[in-house]
Amino acid sequence: MNISIIQPAMSVAGAVITIVALLLVAALIGYLTAWFYAKSVYTPVIRKLEEEKAELQREVAGLRDNVSRLNKQIDNLNGKIGDLESSLKERAKEISDLKAKLKE
Image: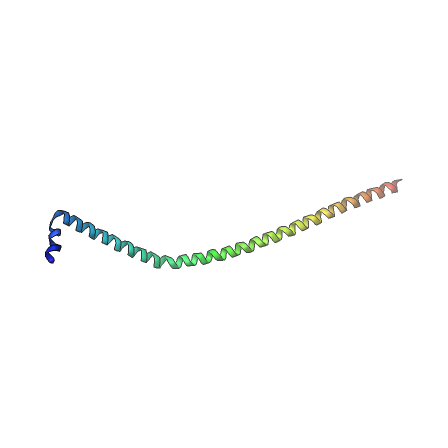
């Protein structure tokens, strides 16, 4: 049984095949080791960032609500300003009419 394993290793082609196979196994082991290490190191970081992202999205939603509420308030105040300006024009006209009557 040992002869069948040793015999291909003695030829040049067998040695090349053995070396390539060992390199592929070493590359696979290195890749898996790096993958598991990166997973163990970066998984907590990713989770923390996702939590911060969710919190920031909630804050953005709250700020958008505030913006829409403030825009409605601005519209209401602009409407009041328009009403007051028209009232002011009417009163200014009344005053000018009264001044004209007093001059007569």
